[in-house]
Length: 370
Image (cartoon, rainbow, N blue to C red; front, side, top):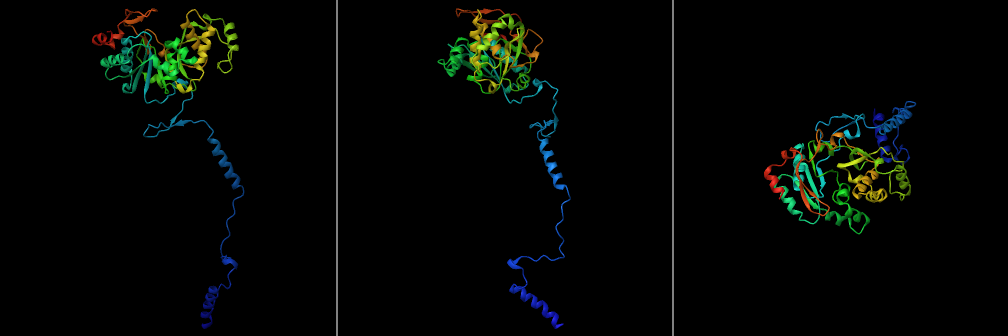
């Protein structure tokens, strides 16, 4: 017994002195500890294959999405069969621009009130009116606000656009010659950097403007209707047009294929514009084509030139946004309006209908017509 008691004591003393320990203080692994398990053959290859498969899934097109405003975060499947114009473009506000060549506040008020009356969210719709220079911008503003106090409007003179473009440049000089014809697209350079809708001033809106502004333009700069009452070949020979195209400076024209004589002209009564997609040399392209086609009426030359500048490079809007006299979401203004003659004098043209009276009462008419 004394011998057995002395052995543990001796071992403890030896351990304290470092005797019997491996060099460097390494721990002794006793033979009763199980060895590390060996991987199953082929497991590493299987893991690598799984990583590659999962990585490859990231490159497949999305099939579902979740709307950020949906509190339930429900997964909604994409419908790839829909036309691009059916895909929703999220917007918080609607900016409406309109330019008028002969100032008539009744038409602007009817455009404003008809749009708001049909809107699903009128408090988020704003109107920006470009009027001829030479008058006081504040007077039209206060008159419209007097009859439509809840409307969100601004009134801007064409002079402001000219100042921003700089008349010393070819672009600014070209706008000075044709301000009304170029306003739909020049607004994107001078006044707005966000998506907007351009509407002819003598219009009445029956549809929801939100439905129009949410149309997905993709990579296009504009969405427009077509005017097929006249065709490209009605104005100019295709041989001449294609010859002119070949002489254009490099990079000025995006369309390099031959033109089709049966192409419809663009209808600029309604435009959906995405400024970030507008090409930097668009105005230069319009100016080039204006000089090239050189019609007897220079304003017709500009409108034809704009069709050529956007040739095969726009989204066709739904037919319900093609302005007509009935059964569409946008109608021609049918009330009395001011008409400006070439000499600058104004005269009043009688109206052709009564729909405009739904949006402008007699007292408001008297305020705006004086």
